[in-house]
Figure 1 (cartoon, rainbow, N blue to C red):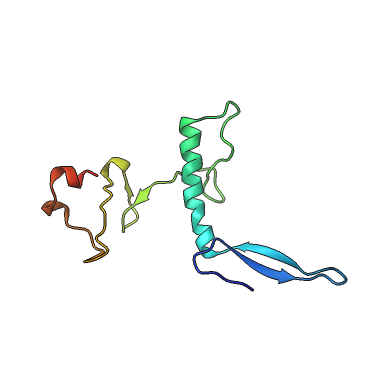
Figure 2 (tube, helix red, strand yellow):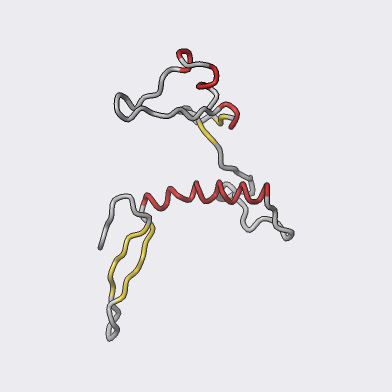
Length: 111
């Protein structure tokens, strides 16, 4: 099996009796995590570019009919409103941890 770190697919050769060798492609763990990104894009499209016939797919809790949506969660698993999420650039040279909000200017804290 061929593996590439960070790739979304991996190739696994196989051969059926009497046939030439072929490749099967499987989603890697990194590729599986991209589902969140794809679901977020679909959720956005359903809201802002709705199709006349309705959404192309519905997101539900497995085994129920309860709807779910893609969003931000804090470390305790509580949802955080988009308006409360700040994107803070990391300083890759000195430290990857962000500066505490209390020491940043107002415009910097509201990125």
